Length: 130
Image 1 (cartoon, rainbow, N blue to C red):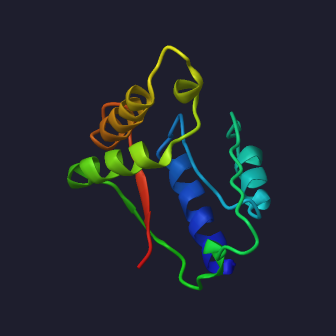
Image 2: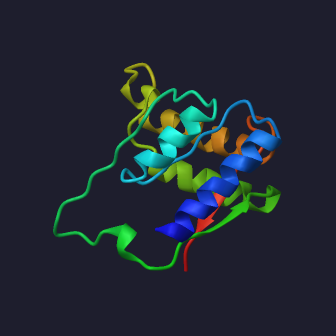
């Protein structure tokens, strides 16, 4: 949608103006145009993750309200850590036979917490929906 495209364009402009060196972004799969725009603007795509759902499940993109995007702050650190610990189920840590599922979860929790606190990332953006 146009509103979503404008927010992504604004984010791209800010990333360039503030000279971010590394960005992690999750975009809906139909937003390939925005991915190509970032590449044309000098960003290098390092990897991609695609998520799929069954037809009988509600499509989260059908909600008309675009999420509110804001910069995370230290008050968000524990919530973001818990969310990442619950959400990340497939990663190189989960596939490592020497790492238990609990250890893999903790890796993602600590990475997320440290990212929000500025130890592992310069900035973390949150998308919030009602």
